[in-house]
Image 1 (cartoon, rainbow, N blue to C red):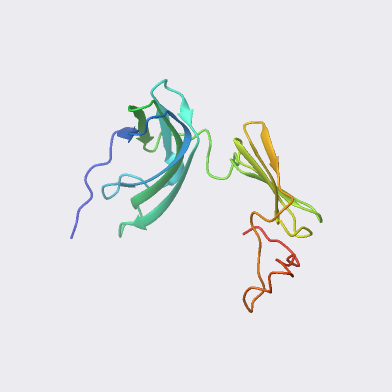
Image 2: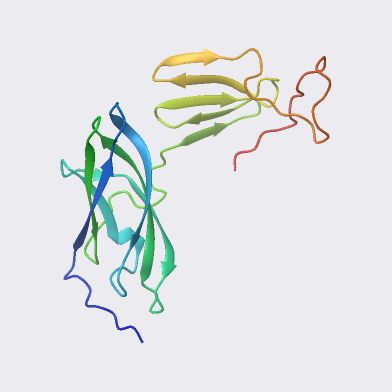
Length: 181
């Protein structure tokens, strides 16, 4: 039988380093990482928060992946957006414990905004905006990245029917509808 080690006093920390070997700086780069916890140390993912090197809280999504027999979290999946200088490191601290309060609990501050209407679906991730339409052969109507917009008249992304590709002179057919999953 495995006995739980005593939990941290009220707050414990785990250092997290994001290494950037690329010849450019990383800004808002998605990072996923699994963190193991000892038996009995973490019971609720909302008792975690991520702090950057400036002491500011970073928006964090977390999901337990595995539990210990006592119900405490064994593995916690972390998803966040990291910054790291060219050829350098982004340094973060994961704080956890009973007294840790996450200022951005899961699902409170969406990072992706989806707007649907009869004519289109618009997706805004902050740095990228995309518009999709079920009434257009192109399906992907436009992309906007950091203020620069590209509109598509010819298919960049298209759908074919269930039976394979139609003859070239017919081209792609418009879908009946689009659905966000």
